[in-house]
Image: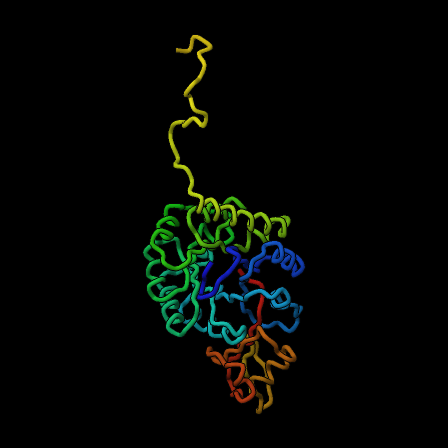
Length: 257
Length: 67
């Protein structure tokens, strides 16, 4: 996959949020074979453990994708991206600008504003967006390196609520489409890829599974399976059966005329 | 002087740089630490030369798990 001007082997991007320990995170990262992983920025708390997911990520040689999780305005998100650029020496950002804390849906107005500013400032902007084809097109037109529509709300695990919207976004996009948010299990990831997404970003489904490393394997395989199925070209859905064994030459053995 | 560091009031010497505060919180700050002063980024290369003024608001951030 080509994303942000670089070639990547893996089509699974992993979020690091929600893991119960750094050991579980590390095992899942290894099992996922992901190359790109997200992290967040939060206040240093000198009274708490200083173990950082960055130690794990750097040890495994993975590519850090900072997010702007928790930002409600374009201004906050732009500043967070600038902080992340300094902290991680990267101009890549997973842009999140949310509208409320019940749905965690993006605020499309603020999101577009932030995306435009960051892209103009030279960032590789990967926006977490609503599954709205028009907004996706606008994000692409202001210079985003990909569009990352949600399947269903962050952490909801419902999979893809509206596959028609994902299909419409895929159909028009000239940048990679990355299904971000909503994956609950492996089949959801396969579905996203079958719909033509270029990659899947997954955090909670792996981190909060009973066995995160196993789920990481399952979702990695599902992403690969869905990608291959998309390229293979599926048969159409039909109302009636289509025999797989030819009726030609069938023996007459009963009264069934 | 009084400054706010990560939301908490702190009394500091009159001559304190951003780098001094970062060191007091994390020791030698490696990758994954970022600082905002009154809402704007202070680049790592400017930490030593940026002095705090009375009433400054400082945010010192680090990498955490996030999706």
